[in-house]
Length: 251
Image 1 (spheres, rainbow, N blue to C red):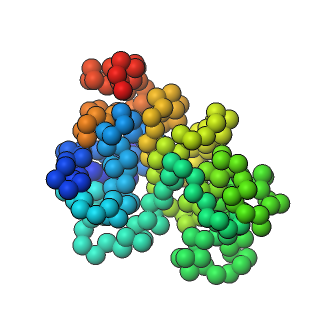
Image 2 (cartoon, rainbow, N blue to C red):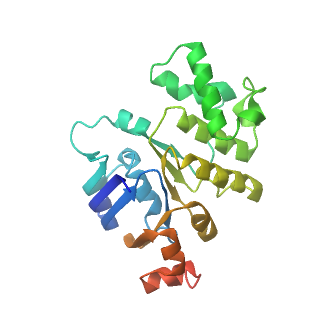
């Protein structure tokens, strides 16, 4: 398996507080990697290191290296806008713009210089199809995105992310605010997208991690306890702390 992201001796600080300690990880391309662990263990902070979203938080510092396709994304001169085009992100709470469904998906391509209406229409249809939403909204593209249900809004946000043609998609608890049917649709979508994207998902839901991911990383108090194939983590973990967490003894 090819490695998409290589993390070497990563430490992350909020002020003087060490939030992540000595993380080493090789994340494979075109697979789904789940990050699990109790609240406050560093999962979301770690996820945000891959697109430098933590840069937006004052008084933070990262030591170590994060390499994507062999390039250190924290080296001098890195184009952060270009990085965030390559590494898209879907947040916990769906956050559509108060614009039409069409304009939500077309927004990113427009920002990156695509103005041709026909080209934008193709991108919008393709992205909504990939996010399993096209059939539900193809006759409503001019309606306000806020008129969609919660599950549809989250799939719209996924379509908006896919419209800028990323290679990596980060998902920070993308289904935590959704009902079971919408959650199932998001999980099915993750399965369908894995062939074309490297997906990293933070989830508190053990069953969800087991269902959707190929690899799982267990974090505890800012440390990576164990990282392996998902079936190993859930059925034959190497560390007792991992076993205790996935069997519900704590967390």
